[in-house]
Length: 445
Image (cartoon, rainbow, N blue to C red):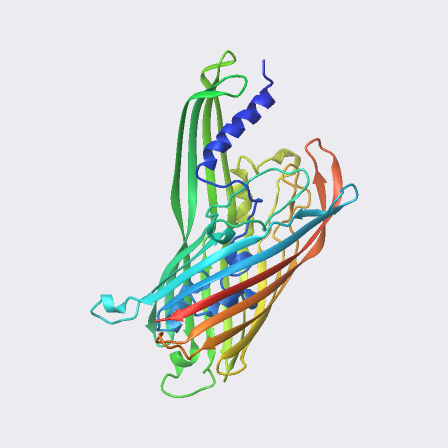
């Protein structure tokens, strides 16, 4: 007779193999994504996302789709992002304190165009999309969900496919509106098989299905001078404000398996169902303001991130809902406010320098999370970047723009209680350093 725990592990392996037909399970678990963890384009990386709501590049489809209207020209952008992570958990009984050091490596492509020529009204309607693919384009669906007895970080790791599509249009005198969707995947796998005690299967039937899930992003921008004094100059000239709303989103997978074990488990067999989420993004409301001067601008934003909703998501997750709720060990999350501030200065006609700062409070409320052992800390984010515009193009109608951004994230020390699978407890201190470099080339048309 095969022990139940051993057979369950073997069955789980078969089920995971089914899901692996559509997903990659070699990444660390992550509740982050490219847009909020680091920044999409070099401008977002360099300003710690403080000026992202006023970035006229295609990353506006994620941060503030209404700002697609700020430049009438079309745009084609390609870029890369490389993030080096050293995430530590210092324990007295550990040989090494590095929990994760696997990099996140994205290739980016985006485009924006004006669809006004398709209509008879000639009213500008802008359409844009941005996509980011992990491992420099080789890994579209990095995904992992797991328990851990040594600790795992909540918001870092490889990121799944980042895809945003949206549009925007001017509404009235300096006021524009935009709408976009973030595309995530909901994957489902069904496995039926007959197995021997040695694990050899026969009469297998495997079905994998992945459906897109569309999550809304709304944005509006007001250029105060154009709205209240369009015919003359006034003290409101140069001021812009924006408001955006992002619904919560996540990637998810579910696996259903039914296994018949000859001479052990007869028909209808043993059923096993697993449902889990990854790359969760909370419902977010953000407001931002910037002032444009002669060759410079300064601005900032505040984000309300409703992470408390993740508690209900985990309660429906068969991997992450491991705690004994009756014992008061359920993992908890707090809603957070994220302040950001940044500036940009035009060094010359062809070069611009920018930088930004942000402070992100950890949403993880509980410091003792058995089975999962999630780690997360407050962090200080600082960025710096430069843009270069090359005007002497012989073949192109518009100048070519090159952007480079660097970002450093310092994870502040925070104490946790690590509980292994046998119930043994050990105090640990979590901290870390993140280095991000991003570059892009932008062509206008």
